[in-house]
Image (cartoon, rainbow, N blue to C red; front, side):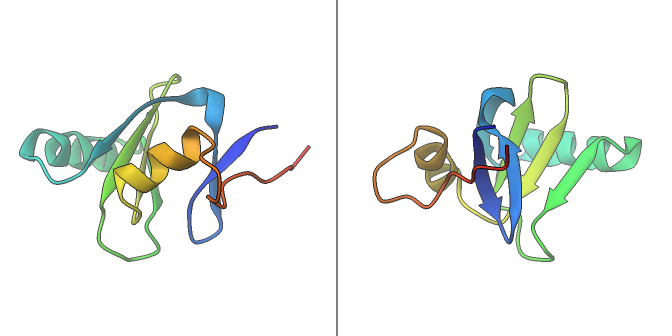
Length: 88
């Protein structure tokens, strides 16, 4: 199983990620609010400021306290990034 760390001991399957976006824009904030209201949000921020949102192929939304650039590097498997955990 190929996973990336989205921070604070939370992981997402790499092959399930469709998009990684900054959480700063108003449209994304509205999407996060709606997902939270409808129960479709996974909060991986551990109470920290939300910096990015990850959309999954199953329609899920994961929010993270890590920036989108950091998560994109981890998703692409950049050298030097602590990203993979072998859970299988």
